[in-house]
Image (tube, rainbow, N blue to C red):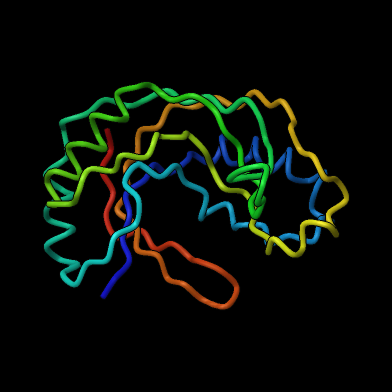
Length: 174
């Protein structure tokens, strides 16, 4: 059984912007994700036992959507203030992302995801019990990172002791 999800990949110039920010925080005792693993999730992970069929269905989305602008405006602890376990950047994305999400869920025969869509990229993970050892209890830094998302990816998540690694199974240029 494979754990799959759909998301947007980021261009190298955009990843370089994040890396420039990250340099100021590398000493923090968190698990920084590799830049190649940074993505913006569109369809949350699901379990699938037929990779080839998932790839074929994903390929059928080609040509149906246009590139989407996204802007990230702050870096903070997430997913919430009560139980932080991530450092992530949050922001705004073109509402057309919902059309991509609905089309993919429908094509894959997955249930509608009723959770509100939060445009974010996870930069680091840490155990909640590690939070008190971080150099700051609050992180709410303004950033101005903008890009156009034009590569939609079918990812497979491989969970390991050091965290998840993401393998690109198929890509669609929008």
